[in-house]
Structures are given as C-alpha cells and as structure tokens.
Length: 166
Image: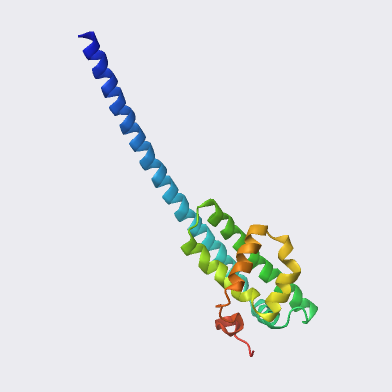
C-alpha cells in the first residue's frame, strides 16, 4: 500500500512538474513576443526622431546636396550632412544589434538596411561611406556592403524629400 501511495505521489509530482514547465514555456514565449514588439516600437520612435531633424530645411538641403556632392560642398553643409547621415548610420547600427540578437526580425530590419544602403549608394553617400565605414561595427559594415552589391537599389536622390536633379 505504501508503495502504491509513493508511486501515486511520484506520478502527481511529475504531472505538477510538467504543468509548471508548460506554464513557464508560455510565459517565456509571451515575454519574448513583448520584447520584440517593444524593440520594434522603440526602433520606430528612434527613426521618427532621426527624420524630425530632416524636417529642418537647412538639414534637408544639406542632406540632399551631400548625397550628390559630398565631399565637395560648403563646409557648413558638409558638417550638417555628415551629422545627419551619421545619425542615420547609428540608428541602423542599433537596428542591426537588435536583428543580431533576435529581437528584430529580418522583415523589420531589411527595410532599414535598404533605405540606408540607398543613401550610401549615391555618389556623395558612397564617398562618405568610404571615408567612415571603419568606425562602425564590422558585421554591420559587411551587411551594408552586401546590400550595396545587390545593385537593385533606387536612387535616393530621386526619392521624395531628397529629390534633386541628377
């Protein structure tokens, strides 16, 4: 009789462990999903903040000029362009870190990568990228360079608020 009760206790204990493990697995999945959602929201907010700077006509003009003419541009515009495109690169570096960690899926990372690659594929963006790329995360640089080699990028100088005569 004692053996039967012991076996029953072991069985009930095993069931309790399985229920606990299932509960914990559910909690981990929910936490991971919430983390991914929060990461996407934070990244979108950071990108909107970056874009707010481009609403300043002087910054927008310097950026458009830089995509075309960097480094052969007036010093004040050159500084403004450099800061604006560097801000974009640092944003992408953050997105890349989230992507590498698994907190950001490729479906969310890829458009950011493509948009930045469009900027550095322009004549001015390319000149800037050649000068500065060594200051960024090597894996990110490889990712950007690989995207540039795909050669299916639209010309950022012809897109919306950066449209200039090419």
